[in-house]
Image (cartoon, rainbow, N blue to C red):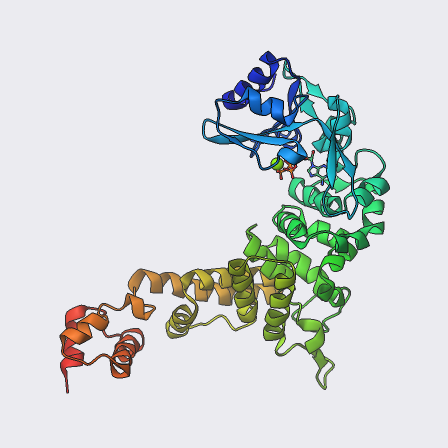
Length: 441
Ligand code: ATP
Ligand code: MG
């Protein structure tokens, strides 16, 4: 017996009382069966959108999805999406269903869903309605298309990335025929809207099984980001590395916290390497300048993928600095904090660690010791000091004006000099003290 939350149950009961079939469906069923708490509960129903709206006439309702059969009802402050049983009537450009056709039965609605684990519903008694073997695939950890894989990916190419996303997130493997069809149809990804696939890509990267999916389906990823293709099989000929660039990249992705900006940073961090490769007189490979080149490439890639500006800027900044020596003195760490801010330096430390994860043991040990020193110094610094930007200085422009200074460049120079004295000469960041320095002729 499944525990359906009260606010969802209430929506279901209203629809039932009005004489309509209605079921929780899709991701919530999958998550409950996996023992996870669903993010949201979607309901499908025989009621047409206008009928659903009439049933909830006294409620706040969002109607933006009506054309595709979806009415969103707000209960208890939480949105519940209610969608009429439907099939896609025409896939036209493969971007989005041009039009939907409403259908009579739950079964038809389940049949249009992408994967067996996403094509289940709960009935009124909490039983599972599962016409395509979703429970068995859940138990065995398998992502499998509902119906003919080839056809399903041709209908909607976004399913190719969705399949990889679910495999990464659930740590499932992709069933053989589904995997084959997904590879064969990867070129269709170029037809779908970038916004849609960027969100799937982030979801994929943040999954626990991301690295494995990237290693198993490189050609699909390279269809979306062709700039990465040159990394594949690229041997580094360096005592610092034991893997080719692509394999190293996939391992670095797994080695950092599952936050989109960090995972994207590791995915793209070495994209500048192939073009910067050269061997010295001892046949050892080097990649001088690859971080800067990579930051420039990553910027172009993320713009093309319609990444939001904050994430894009965060990623390119981290890539730009991913290959610097972790500073080994407090002065060096302070400089970095002044330049980049503490959160960025913390992220860089995480990137340096992730970048070392697959190195040969002695190299990794030495790198981690180095990074550990930087981290220790950063902790100390943050505990002892509080001034890392002009804004943190105990005096500001208005204090200077009160002392009788004229507004203008000299005022700014004075503040910057005070800041330098505090951060580099150990002058205490206290108003009285700093004002005394200004007063001196
Ligand atoms: P999440 O927990 O990530 O939201 P979800 O399974 O709820 O996972 P959604 O993208 O919210 O995924 O989609 C809800 C349901 O709609 C899916 O479970 C699936 O049944 C169906 N679905 C979504 N997108 C597609 C698609 N492109 N093709 C076929 N069915 C789809
Ligand atoms: Mg969902």
